[in-house]
Amino acid sequence: EKLMEFYERVSGARLHAAYVRPGGVSQDLPVGILDDIYQWATQFGDRIDETEELLTDNRIWKGRTQGVGVVSAADALNYSFTGVMLRGSGVPWDVRKSQPYDAYDQVEFDVPVGVNGDCYDRYLCRMEEFRQSLRIIFQCLNKITPGPIKVEDYKIAPPPRAAMKENMEALIHHFLLYSKGYTVPPGETYSAIEAPKGEMGVFVVSDGSERPYRCKIRAPGFAHLGCFDQISRGHLLADAVAIIGTMDLVFGEVDR
Image 1 (cartoon, rainbow, N blue to C red):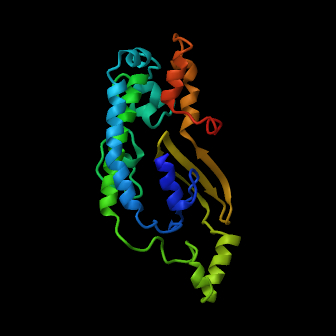
Image 2: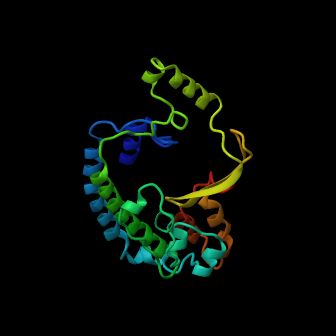
Image 3: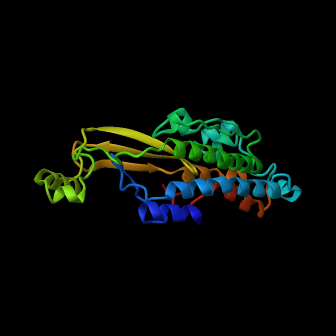
């Protein structure tokens, strides 16, 4: 809930922030939010400790997760798993480390991996990723400095509203950006990020116009759910809850 509040304060939306835009971000950070994020982050470590104290060595929790939903490293790769579903099987693949983007090459963090590839290992990976995320947050808070929030190229990022009232060129750029968009040279590209649930990528084909000829979104959940039949065989029906839970599926994306 607190994270959703930060989203809303920065972008005005709780879920679909649309904050990162071509050439920068939509608006500057509100006053005081960095201090509030720091205060929240210093307390969140205690919440992680409480959760681990409750679950990690709990014999009931272990009995429900150890040896359940086992995925070998070979199967994880064959099924095109990403995220914790891949790292929980012992494969240290994280797009933020393997193919750094944004500022991930400027921060230090570790990539936790599992050993057995079961629900318990995936749980341990996620708990450690909480801690690594805190490391990243603290480093980013220390590195953020005042400055421009987007490029001053009006062919890429729209000009400020004030500039449109004073400059005809800025008004024309704004009109062209929102009525026509970008003209992209013919070609194709695939770009991916490390989303919380795995690798989220977009494949785009351009025919030279301002509209994509083809756009395919690669959501991680489609590949993960595809192996549910195999990894759930021989288990109890109640184990399906643990398996689907550690897959961390969003069923709105599994048809991609």
